[in-house]
Amino acid sequence: TSASLEAPHRPAGHRIVPRRASPRPRVCFSGGSAMARGAMRARARPGKRAVAGTLRGHGHGHGGRDRREAMGRAQKRDRAVSQSGVEDGRYGDVDIESLRKAAGPDYSSVQRNLALELVRVTEAAALEAGRWFGRGDKIKADNAAVKAMRKVLSVLEVDGVVIIGEGAKDEAPMLFCGERVGAGYGPEVDVAVDPLDGTTLVSQGRHGSISVLSMAERGTLLDCGPCVYMEKIVVGAEVGPGVVSLDQSLTVNLAALSARLRKPVTDLTIAILDRPRHEEMFEVCRNAGTRILAFSDGDVAMSLEAARPDSSVDMMIGIGGSPEGVLSA
Image 1 (cartoon, rainbow, N blue to C red):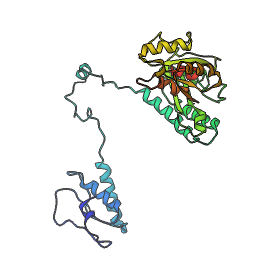
Image 2: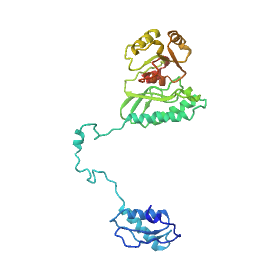
Image 3: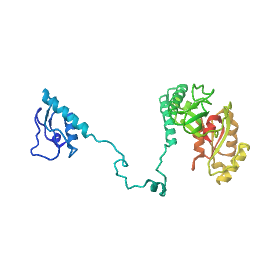
Image 4: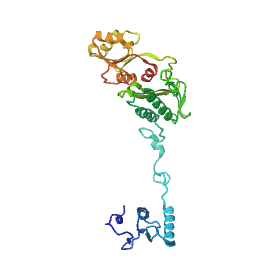
């Protein structure tokens, strides 16, 4: 605010008149904040033409109206026009070619980061699903996540095809396999989605569910077709390829993992989805003395935990959904 607004309170209609002439433009005013803002804009432009006079409240009579109209014309005339540094000559001595040849990243042609936009897709799905947290209806929670993800995906500048999506198991009306997503132009990509991994967790008010999306070049993601479930085994990068395999028994995999990680079998932690079909795996791990981490839902999150460096989970194994398996890989 201007100095006159910070002065002690004055009675309504009191005129504020400068005590001495000033080379800077000035406006004498009394009344509301709109008048004050107009005066402040005029004062902020030294050397520009402004309208001098006295403004009162609403300004009755032709004289007040003429002064207000003159002030409006002056403000429109003095309005600043935005210009870039190249247009107004501020960067006239900068050589664009030298910037391209300089060491470091090339910022002369900055492109959009698609990964950051994909974060907004999963964020929208998670926020909509969160509205159904603890309400006991996993179908509505999943549908809310699907609709939100589909809506945000439709504005991305990609030409995408859903390879892994919602299918007959989820009874979802959209984001089904083969659906075209995106704006229809841009990079041609394959898309794998799971708008809500852990629908039961959300409906029961438990933590651990996530929204997942994966995108890769066209023709690179595995199309599982009608396969609803698949066998999975996940270990960290420090284990390396060829150490564990689905073609080997669980006992052999535990021994190989123990040797590679240089820790006893009894110190290993194995994550297994808590389902009746895994009773044999539970029995093998108990006989070997391995620590078991049983989880009820959300095998994508558990797969990522097993693959994370310095994780407390050494291996995740079991039979789970095919979409979740491709997303985890």
